[in-house]
Length: 218
Image (tube, rainbow, N blue to C red):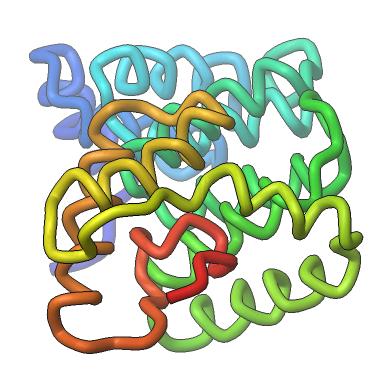
């Protein structure tokens, strides 16, 4: 079958009009790239926002990029960070890496190398291949900038108690997550996997859970 972007747009639009957030996101991308339609950043943002408001993490991440770049909307770094955060809390690795970058630069949020490290670590942990390698390198680069005082912030996040109990792992992860206002689902997933890694005898867990930054000492 011959590639036909215009016809593809027609079908995506039908699904998008019916409320399919994936089709809405794809339609936004096609307006962004000018595939099958006249390139229109404003229209692309309109479709991204529909999908993002419906909870589509891909749309939330790309809407954040639109705000960061000022494409289709007035440039607004704080709004970009807000949308990255929504997608990052949903486990979107690329949004987690974007959030690591904005914390590293202090772009739309207060500069915070500890949180930059945390989000790069989560991005790397939720990825594979070249993405994982790239974000792990970024995480390690940020780690070199952490001061003794910043490293000391971990002491207040580490709980005490029985490592076999759920509450022990919830306490460790929740303390850290709450310091950055992380959502309940993020904290819950982190605590669950944190405990699983300990039960399996791992000295260090490099998944979303270890959260939170790779500074958790076992």
